[in-house]
Amino acid sequence: MTCGTNGKTTTNNLLCSMLEAQGFRVVSNRLGANMVEGVAAALATAAKGPLGYLAVGYLAAAKGPLGYLAADFACLEVDEASAARVLQDLHPDFMILTGLFRDQLDRYGEIDLTMKALEKAILEAPDMTLVINGDDPLTAYLAKKSAHRIVSYGVNEKVTGDVDVIREGRFCENCGAPLQYDFYHFSQLGVYRCPSCGFGRPEIDYAAYGVRLSPQLSFDIQKINSAPVRISAPMTGFYNVYNILAVFSVLREMKLSTEMFSEVLSSFKPQFGRGEIFHVGEKRRQKVLLNLAKNPAGFNQNISAMLQDRSPKDLIIVINDNAQDGRDVSWLWDVDFDRLADETIRSITVSGLRALDMQLRLKYVDIKSERAPDVEKAIDERLADGCENLYVLVNYTALYEAHKYLEGLEK
Ligand SMILES: [Zn+2]
Image (cartoon, rainbow, N blue to C red; front, side, top):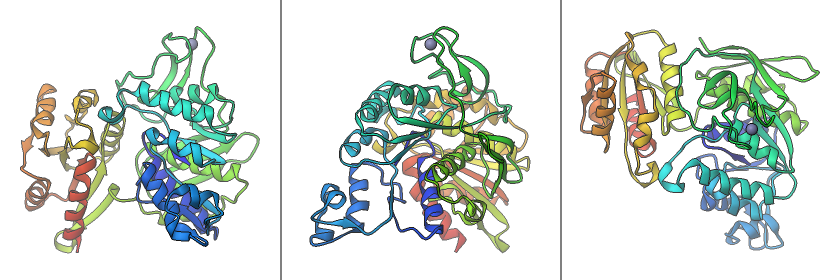
């Protein structure tokens, strides 16, 4: 089971691909339907037996005798708020916690409420191994409070030089004192300890060293007392180091092979709209990168990845405030948009239901932007201008539309 605010779809799908590459049959909710219904549907679809497919509740599907799963593993991503319900019926051997960031404020209230719901679910769950992002003090504290076995992964060196000002979670969850950091990676992630109560970053079982972010990701994974394994992947973005670390850690803990790791990574397709690249226009010379950016941590990471690309580019940002996005877009004020004042960015176009909020946010840091009525128009205009390097950053409900349009242009 994979849980956490950022990166769970990529992590869970990569884990599925790794298991499938070893010949296992895997049940999963690959498309990211990660609420209770989506998890139930994934299991019910894979259910066989006397009532088989009719055993629609995952209770029956998972527990029999009404049905059974024709699979070796179930590999499920579960929304934090659904974890409590899902953990009542499903008892995973491993639960990956990718990290806890401010996300979709409207649906669950502040991060504290999410933390509490998830904490309760994890504390009450039967024995399992928690595979956690040890660089995140929120996750590490939650895991430590539980009696579960903990395996942690993290990045042991300073990689990015970003100045990043999100402050949530930088106080000790145990005693409230400000945490001390040797360095940050982004948001609250880094090497930290509490000077007051002794809480701190756990010993890291699977650590990344020698991280290179371009031209593609590569780094060593070092497990305590064993030889490092060099990983390379046709991906960009520092956050993918964590996604890969999580999957590697779980496979090793399951005593499964990691030999095919780089091979699977080399053909791994980022799922729907996560860093997806489209080649469009005459001779497919125009490159468009589409990415989901739905909260400050995700957005700041997108900005970092984009600025690592030093060629000229245009940028489109689409912000909606439909129910799935969260009605409250005040999180835009927590994103470091001042970093978009970069010489490689030729133009910025904003669109979506909250285009005006976005434009105001940029204006506040002295950055000019244009407004387009919809994402199709925005993309058309930039491509007609001859843009050969276009970045499209969208939040949740704008993703489908943008994806469909770009897919059409590519054909
Ligand atoms: Zn403390």
